[in-house]
Image 1: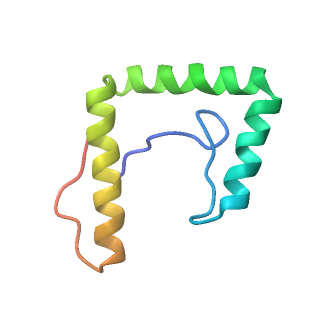
Image 2: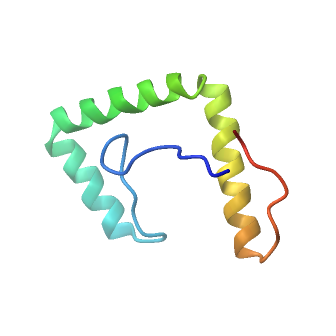
Length: 82
């Protein structure tokens, strides 16, 4: 089972890996749009609470990263969160 950690544009942004310009653009956007920034921050806090708190959220994120690494290395994923 796959775990959805967040929604792009709701709790944060997804940017291409190693794309400093894309990261810069999103930081500038958040700086220039405090209402959006505050809304995303609140949505992220609510998402973490829904997932069981920071500890559980951290464990889920670790699982997502481990799954991604395993896929990249061509290994079968042994476990999943859920």
